[in-house]
Amino acid sequence: MTSPVITFLGIGLMGKPMATRLAASCQSLRVWNRTFAKAQAITGDGISAHADLGDAVAGADIVISMLEDGNIVGQVITAAQAHLAAGALWIDMSSTQQAEALQFHQQLAGVAVRFMDAPVSGGVLGAEAATLAIMAGGAQADFEQVAPLLSAMGRPTLVGPAGSGQVAKLCNQLIVGGTLDLIAEALLLAQAAGADPAAVRTALRGGFAESRLLEVHGQRMLDRNFLPGGQVKSQLKDLHNVLAAAAGAGVALPLAALVTEHYASIGERYPAADQSAALLALEQVNPGHRLGSAPDRLP
Image (tube, rainbow, N blue to C red; front, side):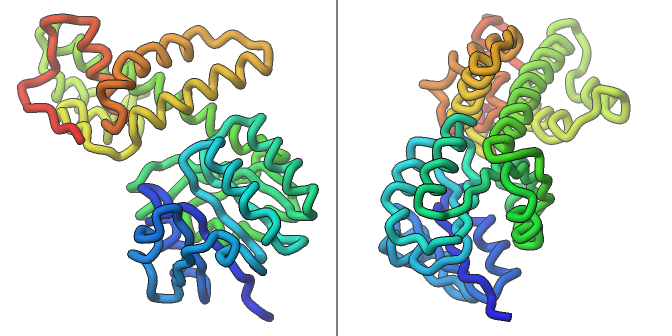
């Protein structure tokens, strides 16, 4: 059987390790990036870089996009669609709004191209380790076709029809953003009330408060290591998308609104900082209180 022609669009912070992992599991992979040098940097071992978007997607059976936001995804789809083969499958792994995913689905259906939204969670470390949670929205048959391919990058789960992947990702980001805020509050409270915050974190681990976020980002906060990782601007974008989805579904999410406000308060000053910088937002509203004594490590 002939191997499918696969194209990966977007060789950024997440896209680079994802494309590298994907390439290791298939015979060949085309890659494209708006800044061509980023695509060129990972050529070899079956990866070929294309400077022209049309050339990159022409004749591809599967196109995977991992781009900055829904606006960029829309621009790339519009620019690429005249070059796409009928019957091809476009998998968008970017984080967008559900309404945008549904729009992409409809737009590509107009040129006989299938669509699946499959955003991810797990950050750069998860992408490097191929342990990403992959939340797919699309047709069952399409998912079954590409599940082995997606498994090269993590753990794929079909969560519903097109657009549902973005809903699942927003649920994930809501839990992440809210939990990071609470971890920051817990550690700052521990110190302000006279306990050792590092020891409190250790004590909490193994109990019901244990989580991957407490393990990784709790330590980041104690170390004041805000080098990304995930970024404040990305978390803030996702939280705004959460509120947009909530408005569309007719539900009020008061905690989501508060967490969004906290991230927005540092969005302009620390846009590229790791999302554990939720601690910095908390310290802004608690003058005179600062977790630990280490210097801030910021991008």
